Length: 300
Image (cartoon, rainbow, N blue to C red; front, side):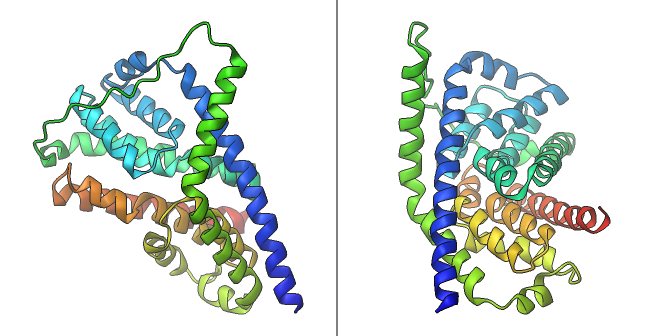
């Protein structure tokens, strides 16, 4: 009975915290994007060299996109002539530097975890974007005729701040409704793990002593994380039961970056070799980040 009570308490506490965080972070990001000049952003993206990759990573970090909007953005960038390396950087950064992930990591796992995660993924996105450009992987783009829809949100200069804030919150609330069921599923799974899975079991198979836990967690995250919003609750529950922080981070990166819906949509833009290469670099990023987090946590 005590276990059941603690499980329900964990569920409602975690659900409330994640809901507040989701709405707050999504509102803030939507507000920032309202002030972001769309045409200038496109011009910045077309810059060649590492500056273009840095800007692509920043834009990826500012856009809380799912695959259904990341892919049209990718097509739009290709259409206006954004360098291929910058496009790859955006594809990696967009799901992995999702503001929801970053905000929740900072709030629930501490600023050190959030900062290290952001730095590792940000640099990986830039590095692999440059690498793919140098290796001429652009030859694996399928020939697609695409005219992006006009999705620019023109800023009305005389619109008061509080009206923009209201619109941002309403946008955040619409996004929240779309992820609500996935959030419930994630928190429910996390609560079951927290309440009923023995700590010894997690320590044995996913603790810091088992180095296989990191790459396995990266792979397991792929079919489990239909939406990344469900990852935090599951990861927190596993970490509280003894799972290493590195395995949790690998789980989040693997699930968010190699999500089956996004990879399927990318297959419509890129040839099979390039899609496989993207999957491999995300897996490598997840594995490296996982081992790095474990090393830091052991040696600090």
